[in-house]
Image (cartoon, rainbow, N blue to C red; front, side):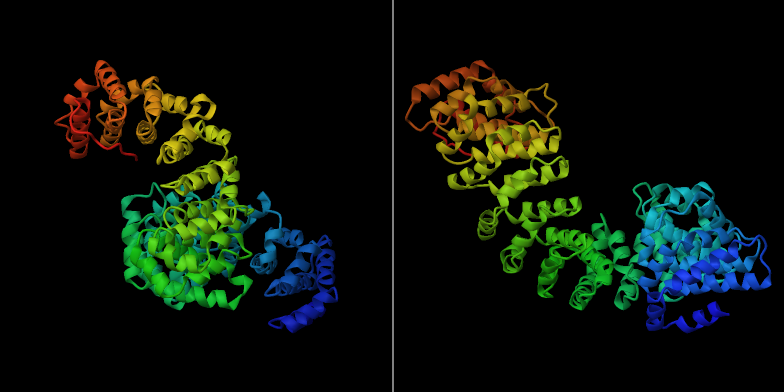
Length: 637
């Protein structure tokens, strides 16, 4: 009777709940439950006591984090899960409902994963598909997937099939719980998603739910279909369902009654430029930006998941669309995005970084809004963020910011950006090494001597050598391009590179260009352009090239039929080596003779009808230079 009175008093009244929790009521009720279960046989009175105790514990967990925490600390979870195996359906129902209320609390994340025996008992309840208890069980299992990723454990006992059967229930609440569990089980599991997609009855039922009913029902169905249609190996007919869902989800975005909506939209649009365009044309950017401003201004931490979804969706839509980026600027969304880079929640910071990365692909955005919003400061601080995902996206964004706009570049330099990037280039994380090396490469693009020296003081030559020999080919490509940018410019720029350790970097370029190196065409292209830039230097630099085996590799590149860019780069090497400025005609004549002896003239003659117009033009220039016709100005790349 005491438990019943207590339960009735606290239902829907947070103030009373808080008061009772503070006075130790949860511990007392938990003790009553434990003592009742200790009896070998439960009479009618004891059974009622257990039911009321379970209901009271569930009520304490509902809507009050302090109450949920007290229930967990009391040890009642073990007693409640034990009741799931009772032969009395009333006890099973009472315990299941209490557990569902507890699992709906954020404090549920502190719970240990449910045991195999508890999972089996919950799955057994799913077979009661026309009873509400089945829906309660499905909701608990959904939380087990979301919190502890127990979907494989659930599936090992036939859980997914049992959950899918709930779609055929006569009770809408049970159907909703079934969709909730399917969504949780298939979110990051392509094998389980495939099982659902192959069940035509389930897919048909989900499609029906997505078109009719209340918004929450539509959303649950959309979450399930999104999970199965966004898998990399999904069938074509399943993938096409993404286009079917898009207008439904955008309509749900207008109301935004659930935090999942922008996340579903983001997943639907990922890697689908045509759907991103449709979403933009359907006013999605305006809706997302508006909701983002409202959410940000509220300052409520519990809205972090919603904020993450909104930022992610904006970032995905604006990734490939300049129109979308322009609209974000016009709607004054950038200040909110920049502020979100400082959010306490790392998932929000990562999503804000994605937005910044997408927006930084627009030169207009960099020169105006991003610069005015002082995005460089927050981004640089994120290079040392505890979250690897945040670090990766922040460093990728900096790659774009430092490429062309000088004031932004100067701000980043002044704030110690190169030091941070140089430090990340030593990371064990290959993505961080790639992004940081890429950003340094962009910093050096058409840089003057002073900037090059500043960068190399922080990066250091030994570290550049390390990056040139990195285990990841993509990192090597960026490092080779750093060399290419360093030797672009004046003779002093070239000298700074070739003199290091008696030409060690030139030796690495020679190795990369060797026909047996296995280097990619992209890496070879940048290496050849680096050689070409060195060849545009002084006679000393030209002779350095002539004295190496790299010319044999350049000849091999001229013969490469797979990459016209590689053939163009190789032709520039010959043009620059034979450039005549009147200062040392004897040196030029000597180089021309040696190049002819190596077979360059005959090779170039065989290329005058190359299928690429650009190659043909460079070949004709190289031949003219080899034959001592009109002087040709040395050119760098």
